[in-house]
Every structure is written in structure tokens, then in C-alpha cells.
Length: 197
Figure 1 (cartoon, rainbow, N blue to C red):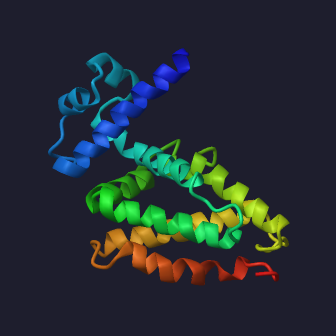
Figure 2: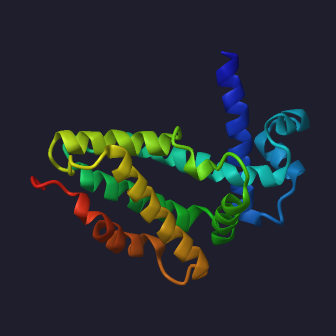
């Protein structure tokens, strides 16, 4: 029970922070406002986070929660390659509509200089576990190539997503990430389709 309460407190802080970051910008948001918005205490905040900068890496948590939500909407009869493309479209749409470009750029730049754990590369995340599950199912069904490991397919998928997001940040969002991803992700990953597809 205590573990669930702990998770809920941390999630409340993360949710409040990202809501405020989107509404007011990262620089325009204070720790005090995050505490107030989350309905938690100063002690709780500093128990989980050293400061506001530490919240940047929690964008990976936001992505993971989106993937958890999307898991429930996956059509079990759909081709697994198409499931992967669906997840990508939904994530990119969320990025464009719910998270400021500045925050995404800050996350990516912070990951480049972070020593130790890099949240985007944590293969225990829901993101990587869900992708592995879909790829393994696709390989069993002949929808994805079985002559490469599921881990390699997932690694390339994640690499392609990161590359498109990074380029979108470098371009200052001067094009639609979701529309570009809709075209490019299938092209990048087409070589992983199985013979049955």
C-alpha cells in the first residue's frame, strides 16, 4: 500500500509540473507552484526531486504513461508493424499538442550531458517493454522478420523516433512532427516487415 501511495505522490508532482511547464513555460514555473498544483508538500517534492531541473528527465515518465494508455486501445488483430506505427503517430501527436518544443529540446540536451542514468535509454521503461512485446508477437506471427532479434528491432525503432524528434527540435518545430513521422517511420522500418505482410 505504501508503494502505491509513493508512486501516486511522485506522479502527482510530475503531472502538475508538466501541466505548468506547458501552460507557463519551464522558466516561468516555480517549485512552489508545482507543490501547490500537485497538492503535495515541500518535503514530498524534495524527497523525489533535487529541484526543478530533475523534473526534465521525467518526460520519459510522461511518454510511458501515454504508452500505457495506448496499450488499451491496440487492436489485437492488427498487424504488429501497424501497431508500432500507431504508437508512433499517437506519441508524436501528443508531443506536438501537449508538450512545448522548448521542453522536449531541454530533455534531449540534458540527456546528452547527463552522467549515469539516462531516462530515455532505460530499457526497463514501459516504452521498451511494450515495444519488445509487440515485436516478439509480430515475429511469432510472421509479420516482422525473425532473423533479427526483437531487441535490435526495438533499438532501431527507438533510434528512429529519437532522430525525428531531435530533428524537429533542431528545426524549431517548423513542420508537423506527427505528419512527418507518419511518412518517415514506415520508410525507415519497412525492412523489418516479415514475408507474410
